[in-house]
Image 1 (cartoon, rainbow, N blue to C red):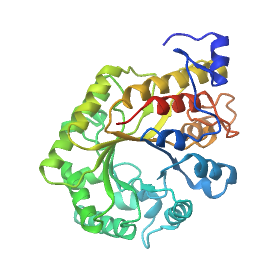
Image 2 (cartoon, rainbow, N blue to C red):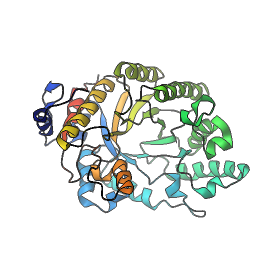
Image 3 (tube, one colour):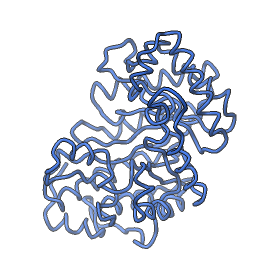
Amino acid sequence: MKKLSRRQAIAVLAGTVAAAGDRSVAAPSQSLGEIAASNGLVFGAAAGPVIDKDAAYRELYKTHARIVTTDVAMKIGTIAGQPGPKRFESADRLLKFCSENKIPMRGHCLIWNEWVPQWIKSMGTSERQAFFDSYIEEVVGRYAGQLHSWDIVNEPFWPGHKAPGGYRLGPWYDTFGTGYVRRAFERAAMADKKTKFVLNEAQTERDDDVGLAVRAGLLRLVDELQDAGVRLHAVGLQGHLQPRYPHDPARFSEFVHKLAERKVEIYITEFDVRDDTFPADIATRDAMIAETAEKFLNNVLRIPAVKTVIAWELSDNYSFYTDAAKKKDPLAERLPRPLPFDSDMQKKPLWFAMARAFQSAKKA
């Protein structure tokens, strides 16, 4: 990536130019949701529990989000963190907020081999099999017909685990093998006939051995599910952009086209830009973040099957990257800036870059 001058970076901060040169920008009075909708896209964001406490942050969602994904509210570690009755309070509050503001809500995520409570991992195989089925039946049944979509299985692949086919290891893989994915979709379909079902995956943006292996595995899995008659409406590509890894726009576009040929919708489900390899200077860093995001979005939004872009939270202070940085060093002066709003909930160059990308993504 070319280095921007200080003057260019400041110009990007003002939302008047991007690294590629002068271009028009959407009126700052418009919301990202409005700009996306005017071009046939849906923009939204994940929302964590802080939305209950921070009124200003809550207003960002009311203004900008046309869809909301649960961050942790519907993960098994929240709902079934301990034995006994399920804990649905957090998910119910977020659903109430979304319903009151007429914002569709996505469930994330039903089954994942990570963040599974120890008491479930400690079960015997037969007990865990029974729990898997009953958990899906209860949770999906509770919210049947109330959600826009469900991430039924999250991140089935992680080549680093060295499992056959590149699958991610964990308690569900240990219990059912690779068949846990199909089983999860089929059990969910018994409990909910209306909600869109999504297979959500990370790392596909990487053009290295890991990313290419995940892409191949994902295409193969979609074929297997469709051949088995599984109800699969969409594939989620998380979109955590990581400039530390190579990214080839042409090869990524080719992969997304291959997914689209399988007649599934494609959602960018967890969009942000990791900035730890960029310079510390905020003006320069913000400009590079914006440039990275705009190039990615301009490329992927040319593909009609890509319907939705969902940021993983909206403001920098509530990013999971920021949380991790503060845990690592509570006194850190440099904090991540991966999202369209800063910690004061003001628009950043990334906001304008996303607005421009949405504005130019004319859909048929």
